[in-house]
Image (cartoon, rainbow, N blue to C red; front, side, top):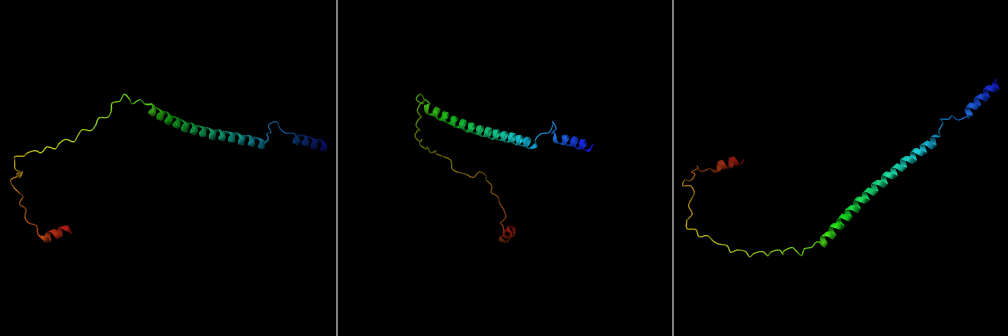
Length: 119
């Protein structure tokens, strides 16, 4: 009986279950997937930056070529600046007179009052 029990126990222990998965293999697979995704994202960002810089460069080249090929023969020439006009002086027949007939009559201020106001 003991032998039968020991043999049955050995049989169950030696067999792997159907759901048993190698943990190291799963971890390695997940790590590899994450590394691949990271590399894909880095390459996509690099490609996007390179395309943006190439687009800017191509735009500037096209604009420069368009400036060089622009036809300016049909444009009229820029007119010359006219001579400076002669300054005319006005002859004033009226003498200068004050605007108001009255003046302000303020009392004189003493030096002591000025000094006390300044402090």
